[in-house]
Image (cartoon, rainbow, N blue to C red; front, side):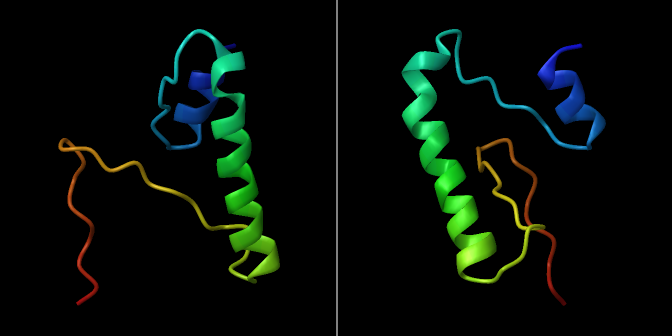
Length: 64
């Protein structure tokens, strides 16, 4: 089973970062460290996430 299939099964949209994972390890590690800093060290909890914004992204839901 592909990782992208698992990500989609969780209701998320996988993002392709390229064939050579070795080239992207430092970026992925940095995002992981940022998540842990926000979730654990700053107390936001483990249910926080990041959203990739593109021109095709749907608008954020209004907080009315």
